[in-house]
Length: 527
Image (cartoon, rainbow, N blue to C red; front, side):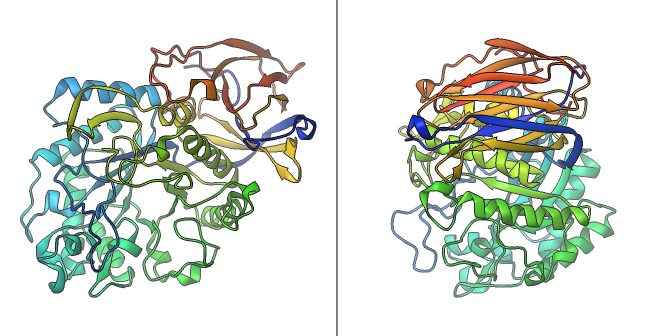
């Protein structure tokens, strides 16, 4: 698609209850001459190739408190041979425009016994389906080994404990490294996948890299061994971490899964990493008066991003979600309008803070293990079987989807300033301005107030005329799976008149974009 001008993303946020007299006008200025970051990734979701059931029990384990010891990182994918099902998955993923995907596997799938590799089995064929999609659609892959789950390399005390095998660090780091390097070599050199750009060797090692009785162990030996094994095969794929690192306590009492303060000296393996990534679930909105609020983590993200970028390395939010409204079992809360709205806000604020890629948990998900996180419904939680017809999961699909659908990977981020848009002392307007590699424009706007905002947007330095098409999602459409997202109106900008004014509906996401997409069109991945 030909470029027509810059790509802009803006989020406006206010509390769910506000007084009209306190709602100030909003003015956003984008400096198109100043690039503050070029994203090394984009926006996507987790795709897993793990279908063998992992222990779930309502009775707490004596060591590990989880009910679902693999979280919801397994299940809900159809067999690779089911072309009808995969055509549905393909269509939804293209509509969503996922361009930076975290693709997940466990060692059991490809190396069930020491030195005995299995590259043609049902789960590996699902992995190939996922990577085929990413390759064909020019999406970047952040390859993630979630855990090992192999008896042969589990610490001795847990080899006969199903939960222990999931949570165990490897008994032999050398064997672990040789195994994962053999997998990567198979995928990159034998299968020819060029989409694999990053590798993370353990999901949240503070929970899934333990030794008996429940002790974290250093990650450096394993990272060093994996780096050596990759290099020996001529594989230059960078390693990423800390991914919520084991052995480092929270830097504040109320902080768990979120970006810590910038203290890289606490991680003794930083020199082995080619990228940095964190997970974030526990953040609250600024105005709720809690310490673990988004503004605090915006600052820590900006610090990490600036530090990473000086080294030429990216900073990723490799899992994003909201637990503030509830989660667990079959809870609908993660996919509620409030939660998806909060996730959308976090992503746009972290783009402005300098983060390079975002992975919203998770594309397909059973929805009955640790909450309804899925973008599309493929699983019947009552019958405990796959559905035949896959439909959008309300709220998540359209709110997060409108971010990913209209943004391209590797976009430039422009300097953007916001005036007004406060309720009391709290800012409610957050903006991130991006330009796709070919120069296309998108303006994403959230109004989280119960009343409308009058907003104006000015593009300083605009040289070419462009036309922005408007798309929207608001609370009156929440909990629906049958929406059609088509252009509603359009606005013409010129160098002489580089402004846009509009009224933002209450509790709404509005998109203004040079992409003239009908609902039947694919979203943008690479542009």
